[in-house]
Length: 182
Image (cartoon, rainbow, N blue to C red; front, side, top):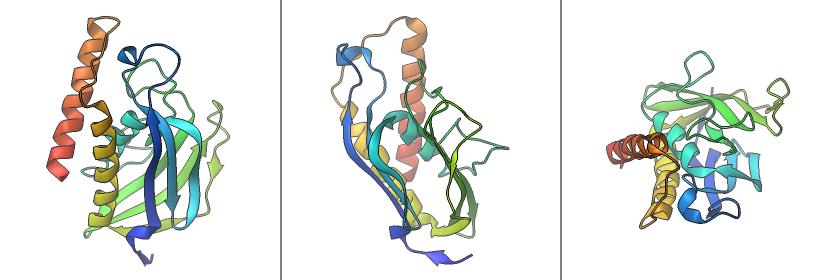
């Protein structure tokens, strides 16, 4: 394993918006295009929209906990955002393993699903990359702050009480994790 600088984990929002033709008050998640590069390989190049707010919460969870298929913090770390509930997307998205050790974060097992068939992900040749934990945290917190700022002064209309409660629970966890790491 080799030590890598923060340029080996690039996560940038290209644009952020509300999805579809219905009024933005009904969309509970922000969406947009992302640039994601890990160890110099482009994982996401900005061609497809993803669920940004859901992805930000999943990534915030990795700041305190390891994440892999045996003990996931979310279904995926980058959600497509086509699900009907917060944090429950369709199979399209990106996932990788995160392991914390000695003030470092190891990223491995990077997979991207471009269609709903979970049996055929695109696998990336990056076997393991070590990042300084502070650099990883800074990239995730910066991403989450951009997402959070998009929701400022946005009023939402909920389909029912369950949607309202899920939205409140989502943002309570999001805000607690963001405050802890800011």
